Image (cartoon, rainbow, N blue to C red; front, side, top):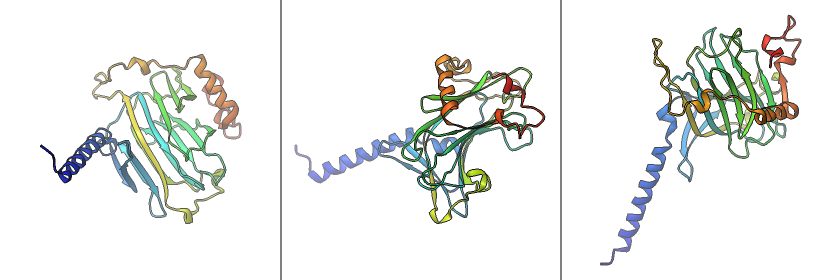
Length: 286
């Protein structure tokens, strides 16, 4: 029996729609795992990956925040930053326990640049409201030309920052010093106007004639423990040991040294003007 050509075309179309829907459903991380605020758009690429865009104009920026809070884990996302003149803008991927005076936070913030200038990645760790612990790096690639992967590894021993396959920083825990280890944190991503601070210490503002500014996110993953409250044990995924006991080995410390030597823009442990009474205690121990 021969199938009518039009019927065959309709069958193929239905199959393609079903396949795309199934693929999209498997990668629909934004609205399942996050709430949104401001200018946020979700689309799918040709491979069925959900791509979330945050958009900044003069009226508003954009953000998404996880519905779940975590206590230790590996958090990773792929980002494609603003092309061209992004001066004054700040794009982020970070963890935070909230906005209170004693909050904990782990930051990866991308400070916009004038056209042709390198983007600065600001890494920072807040513990009990103290956040003067910045390491800033010039990125060694164009973060707007393609997607790159940015990862935070957080356990009870250290906070590790990773760009693609390269480790760039490890913030160690010391028993006598504040560390972000007692407060569950949510995952956040934001795009906002940081003209007062972001580019050349606020000297270069956002050029609104180039708006809207768009940052794209995809491939989000969180392999992390969830607190149960009331002192109950954490709910952790299988194989937690692969990151709960994670420390850098000698080769990985080598990539940290490479990033520090070649691309470090600012290290709080070198800023004597900022700490006239002496550097924070961890500066002499790292």
